[in-house]
Amino acid sequence: MSWKTKPSSTMQIPRRAEPYVSPAVAERWEREIVSKYHVRKGALMPILHELQHEHRCIPYQAMVEVARFLGISPAEVLDCATFYEEFSLEPRGRCTIGICQSIACEACDHKPLMDHCRRTLGIEPGETTADGAFTLLAMECLGSCDTAPVALFNETLHEKLDVPTVDRLIAQARQAPAAGHHH
Image (cartoon, rainbow, N blue to C red; front, side, top):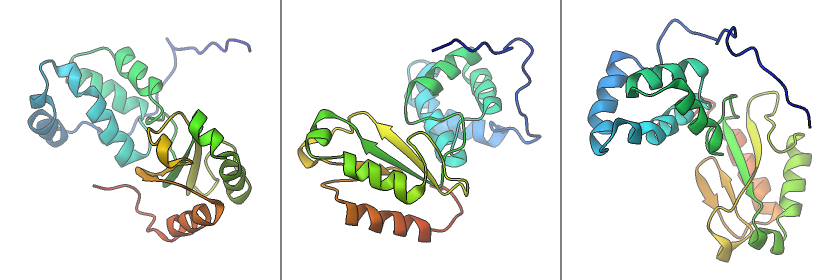
């Protein structure tokens, strides 16, 4: 593996005219999220979760704005956004399928489920279909070992999975409105 260097000091981040942290969003976050924490930084995870849910990724501009809002460095926001599998810097598909790779799911034969998804969707784990419909992820333990094999379809856990059920879930996701994630 080679180290790839990025021209971080001169790199331009993609920007849009409309801020991600508008005055209205900042006011709502203060009221609904920040107020629950002893320190402002405590609100970082729920704020990133909301951004991921809304935009299907955590845009760089949003990270800079969130850092300013919380009074922390952009690096702290980036560290958090890149550490957790739940967050992505690249847009994910409208439906993210996360197949559990834990030892229990392995023992209960998760491999045919992953192989079926790869064939059906034509992508490898970590990739998104060209039409933006699906992202396939190999995930660490989803905490439901007694009902293995399991997978997340967006934020819904599906247990005791088999290939026909996965096919049904993919078909349902294809039929879902393409408006994206909204609360």
